[in-house]
Length: 120
Image (cartoon, rainbow, N blue to C red; front, side, top):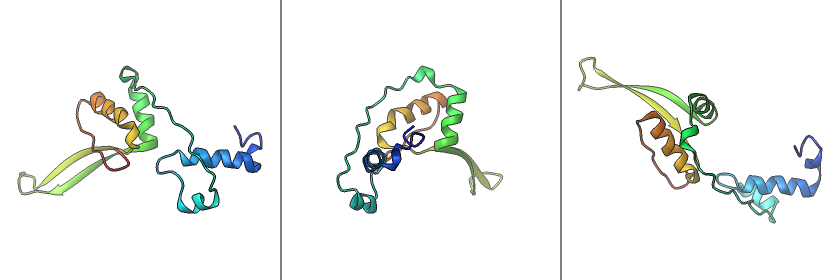
């Protein structure tokens, strides 16, 4: 909306955009932080996850933007065919969205989430 109105062309509005960028994922890059030292991350309230609203179309769209399905084939002497096949669904999100990912586990009725320092 800001860009359609040409507001991004002012220094004040550019700072607003940088402040929004500062609130996303890992924040500002060192170069942006140096160029915009007065940046303040905007607050991002936690939104409740409504598990009953997850449906196939929403999951498909979410996966299209932030995830993938993959097939892994590995050699294994434990199986007669000589290989093991695994179907994998991957979505990586910020740690603040852990409840959303757990709702996907419930939706599919399988899987698990893994937490790392800054993402789930």
